[in-house]
Amino acid sequence: MSSSKWRILSADNSGLQSSDVTSIAEDEQGSLWFGTYGGGLTRLSPEGDWHTYRSAEGALANDYVGYVATDPAGSCLWAICDSVKGTPPDPGGVCCLTPGGQLLHPSEVYSSTRAT
Image 1 (cartoon, rainbow, N blue to C red):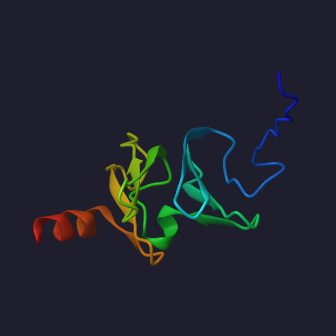
Image 2 (cartoon, rainbow, N blue to C red):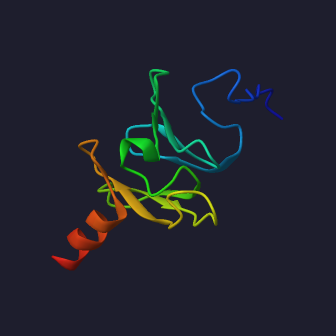
């Protein structure tokens, strides 16, 4: 049995904007992506840098990210925003972060998938 140490991350001791983590995914570059309930989508780079995407920036439908997943081809990181009744903006949706770092709004994801 190996002796490994666990590190507990929270909004108090890390770059997470919310301690309510709903999903975690690792991309091909080794970054960890955290979907949070109320804190948006947060990236932890292999170098230890934190960056959070929030709905106020216009990229996410809202800050309630219920699921994060990577595309097997490495072309997109998918984030699914929950529909939260009474929380503007109310509608949920699917967002896609491209390898170039562009976070596509749900309407842009729909438009780009319809074009192919």
